[in-house]
Length: 393
Ligand SMILES: [Zn+2]
Image 1 (cartoon, rainbow, N blue to C red):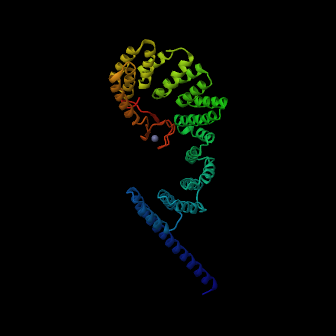
Image 2 (tube, rainbow, N blue to C red):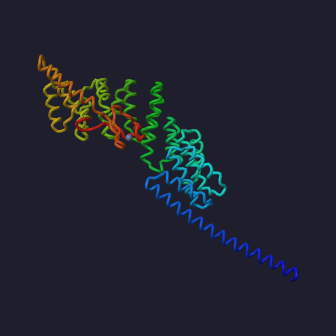
Image 3 (cartoon, rainbow, N blue to C red):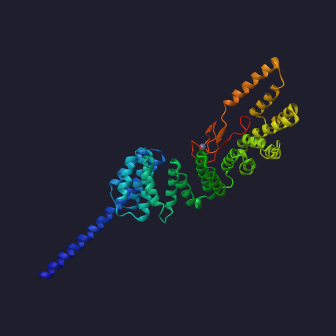
């Protein structure tokens, strides 16, 4: 055979070998992909049945069939998350860091892994590392930045970095205008409270105005402003600020009553709040408002009128606190054994009242005796409110 014939044969053999190899590789790749898909769905099934251990085993088995397909990416992400959820943060970090080192990742995939890694750091309490990563992701021209911003907001709230929290919340306004405005107003109130604690009234007033500019329904800003103006002997301003609450959120009117009564006394216009309280009682009745009105009647028209007013109100809206107010009013007039008996009853009612929670979170049901602007249980803002009804307001 001439030399060129041998060469041709050799070339043909190489070509056939290559083609066969390719077909074989293609077949293998397809087989692997099929296996992977199968394992992936088996893993998902375990997840749906709340069997995370079995799911992890399946995903690890799936990843033994190494390839860089989209499914392995998703599988690794899910595996990392599962480790994270089981509290195995180190393993989660390993999985996500390993994934991030892969040169084949697309830009979008790389951002997603970084976000997962930031979540791992957060669970591990490595807030600084999480923050640095999230700040990078938040600069991306990609929707994933909103997830990063939401996590950053959590960090700044945990660290009580209120100005940073405000800046981040402002960037999230497009994701829920009312929701983030409400939060921003609370963050401004936190800053105002810090200024008040340092007796920097000018600064506190600025922060409270910012709070009201951001969310004009910020009850907390009105209450703080009312208290600050009272301390500064600006009683008219305090009165105005506190009377705004009925429009902002009538469920908080009861919170402002003790201070409002004090302001009214300072103004020397006894009964000047009568109109406001009467309106509140009509539109959104509460025991605190009813008792404040009864107190006014007591002072101007005497004990009997006040007693009749309370009884009329209790028939419409029974409440333990109202009953206590009524007993207290009658105690003044009694002497001897009747007074003793009624005192006993007053003590009993007082003990029942003291055993009840005063505030409850409308979001998670957490209840207690203190007003928390951020629910200690579900971490929502402004959801803890005075309890209403027979045992509350
Ligand atoms: Zn809650």
